[in-house]
Length: 608
Image (cartoon, rainbow, N blue to C red; front, side):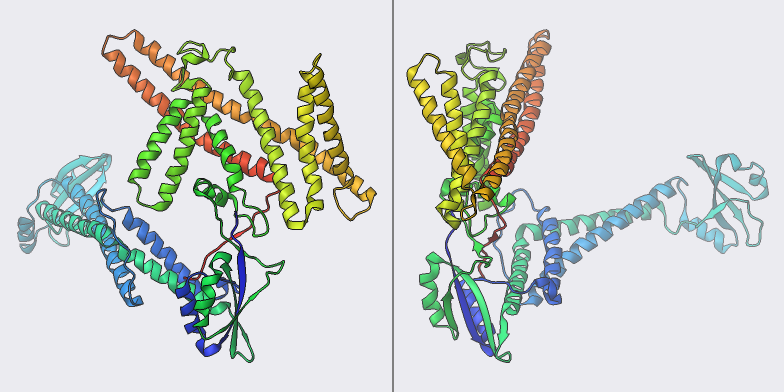
């Protein structure tokens, strides 16, 4: 459900406005109405940019935390300078680590290059140069090296590497030189280069250890600095939301407070130098939305938020689609063993998780896994094996005599789809009734009654041959459906004339008829995806038996284990993806459409 909100108007003397905002932030329950966009103000955009950059830095540092690193509490700096100092410290360490990595890479390339020239004595080279004989280093394509250069230029061929000839000449200044590319003579020995590389690698390791230590023990300082900037942004944003009046001497501000907290707000505001008044909510007000559900439905709020929050004027249908979502997820998985694995894995993850958001996700997965374990077992498949209660062989397929065979599962998927569609139309009718009155929701109710009673009447007619009770029931049900159709056809727009109602009714009839067919057929995916997962699991079981059956004892178990682990692991991953995606699709497209979900709500975000 959606919590009721109250709208407040605040009037503050301009010199006391900042102090008033401090008091409002300490109160922590008022959602300030935004009258201006933060995009219009450069200082706010710079704060957002600073937070984005800091978020990248925090992600990079957190990725370097040790696996056994303890949780670090958030430490909010007292001043901007303290936060900047912490950020600068870690940024310098990261930058120096990158510089060292570049130097190490360059040093390795240099060592690899001069290794091609072999060992050389830098001291002897310097003695020769002082005596007037300098060594010149050349490279040339191997086929272009000329043997006469050995006599003509006193050339000494050092190496042939990757179609390049490496050679040196010993000569005096002014001597002719060969037509080859001269390279700069080495300035350090190979041994000195290796020592420098070792020093760089040691410094890089020490720098990396400092970064890891920072990530393990001081990441809370970065998180605190982010919170400091967020608070600064919130306060600066709140400063610009008031409208100046009376020659800019008075500031007018509007805000929203949950109804259940209103009793605590008044005493606190009485101690603040301002005038305040609770005012009526207008039709065009963009009231913030705060969801309030029980522990079960609260787990599925993340699914609601993936699409959109409901707006303040409609219903929160989280608790209404949650059971359907669980059942659809289980039908798509279609294997009781996989559901048990998901339940166990989510339980272990929840026990180890420390973040409340992760615990909430794990709790939802526990519900989904438990439902899958039950539904999958009823469908007769556990880890791709057919269960004995189906009457089939373990490595076979579910026999047609079992109550939940392939034919009945297809019909069950369609029936479940019709149930959710009809339920969605009842929800839409109730929503319209709450928003505008019963007479405006009557036509929607009638369409739901037409589908429900018309379908039941047809079923009773099909199975009522020779049965007086079913025959009478079918007539009653079809009569109710006919009455509902007449009402929907001639009373769909209250207050309009009968011809306009009739035209709108015909158009609604076409939309409902075509939409009902397409929506219902969409639910066949529940049967198809669940069947595919079960068949794939059975295929990997048969493959493991066939491949491992002819191998020696011992080896056959190893091969079978590898095939089963790989096959079922792959199948589990595919089932997990499809079992999340397709129920989401049925919820957001079919159910939301028939429930006439509007969305567009804005999250309640109090200034605190």
